[in-house]
Amino acid sequence: MSFTIRPATPADLDAIVAVHKAAATTPGNLARAPEEVTPAYGDYAIASDICLVAVEPDGTVIGEIHARRETIALFAHVLGGLTVAVHPQRQGQGIGSRLFDTLIAWARAAQPEILRIELAAGAGNPGAVRLYERLGFQHEGRQAARGRLPDGRFEDDILMGMLLF
Ligand SMILES: CC(C)(COP(=O)(O)OP(=O)(O)OC[C@H]1O[C@@H](n2cnc3c(N)ncnc32)[C@H](O)[C@@H]1OP(=O)(O)O)[C@@H](O)C(=O)NCCC(=O)NCCS
Image 1: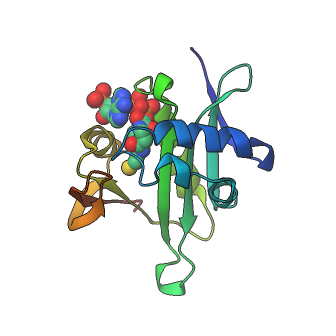
Image 2: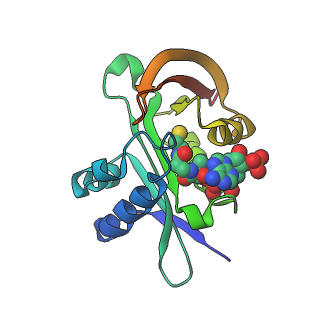
């Protein structure tokens, strides 16, 4: 099924929250549990420096990506706080890749310059790590026991970055 990518607007709030809640039902993928995906989180996403949604022809939101430019001058060329979610029924259909392609194109054209994009993924989310590798993100490190899953197990975080120069 076809879809388009466009900037999010405040009118997308409920739909963005719904997509993240649905994606969060698989433990260990998104950092937030479903009950932590609140309207306040949706507002935070939409207020990011870049917030894009993937929409079906009828307007249904099926994916979202957002990220923020660092505010301290030393890091002002860095885009971080990146989170992406695609509705579980639409995963594996190229939507996440297109959201990233659009975000990276935006970052390359941004002024002041963005020269680095960074993200983290749980070690138990190898599909996402594979996607980020394919997009050109490099492995930069590992944070031991950064996450703790609902069953009490610890999980490492994998740090990845992409330079735009
Ligand atoms: C990770 C995610 C955003 C990727 O979006 P997508 O639209 O499914 O990805 P695409 O179809 O563009 O690309 C497919 C690739 O994504 C990865 N992937 C991750 N989760 C996947 C899933 N549930 N189904 C299929 N592919 C998935 C795989 O590497 C796959 O490549 P492969 O075919 O070589 O295995 C999406 O699967 C998702 O929302 N997952 C749950 C939330 C999450 O994990 N977010 C990232 C937190 S770091």
